[in-house]
Image (cartoon, rainbow, N blue to C red; front, top):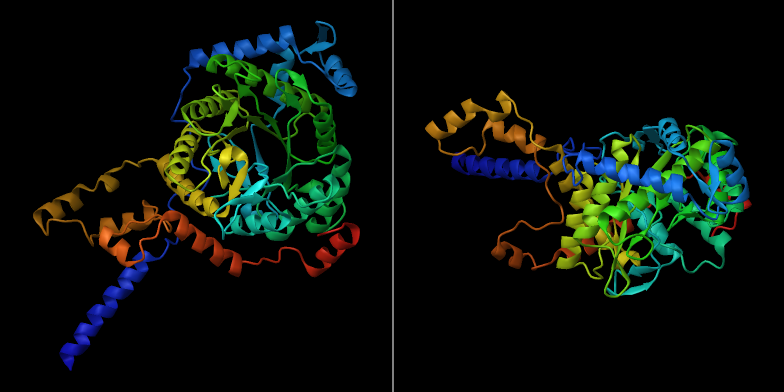
Length: 508
């Protein structure tokens, strides 16, 4: 009987230790916000040349199609007319805008614990995109994205640790008009997450009424402006080198309501920008600086994400190419340029051209996201869930990308070197003792402190993998998505807030 008890104790103790080791660590070994900047595709001399070229373009060529009130504001701030109706932005004016722009600021979550500070060397992965198709959980094929998909994507990412903020990733194509789209997109964000969120306003007249909705969620009239938890994605500059009137009007409205803005330049190499990478970077930097000048002239000190997103087309076909070495190095270089100017950098990556969750998907996402992070991109957009050259969004991809981000953050954390970490005594003890480090105090401490353990990626032996069903990553991610969507149904709006929103807006 005594022997049986000892056996049971050993077995139960071993099971307890295995369960403890299988559980996620109490402290995330590599949380979002790790420092980037180790990858420098451009030398200091390269950056100086590109910056001077960008200043020359703004001063000599200037910006075209400038809307009237913006033209008046730019001229009053030091701009001048050139080449007809174009408006030049002199170097002194550009440098004043850079100096006025915040180098760091807070992206607020409705839950203050989920707010993030952006800028400096901190790297955060988030979302973006406007996918019109969703990879169906059941069929594995693409279909038109719906409002229900947007609610589900928002609920899913709310549970993902390594997604720092959520921008609506798909367009609800079942909405009847632009107003219904903007209203119901905003409501989906408020209902399903308390992370920092971002959306787009299709028309400038949509901004003020939607701020009323944000005020309801914030607790009363004027409360949203005190602590804005929604930022706007706007593209006020259209490549090459001209403003877009509607987007400029949206920008004015956002500034008036204290909404942080992400002003996105999305030139395409060989189409709307030079095919040479250096020429592309010069023009794209100039265009994003034009957005910055606009924001800082209209409202000095307003928080703006300097979202210089170099995009690439396949020059053989003209099709957008979201994956590949060129887009990896261009967005890394963009982050490097933005950070060198002391601006909050926004870049894009993980825009795989793959339609399925396959080897192409993994290679393109891993390459582009790691390059952008290592270069120090403060906010890395499009990096979660996007597929099919931004035409598609995938639930499974959200789960897999979250795990990829964890590994990237761990790579950014790097190696801490100290006498304790080297642990000469532990090496002596293992070599002269049992001949291994398993179970040692140093190993157990490092296990929780230094290692990130995947939940979806498979590390079984081939035999154990076969016995467990021989599943692939897509299948395991699909199961995880179904589990989350079945169980995670947050109520981030009170009944009173929900009723007030529904009274003032048509919620579908």
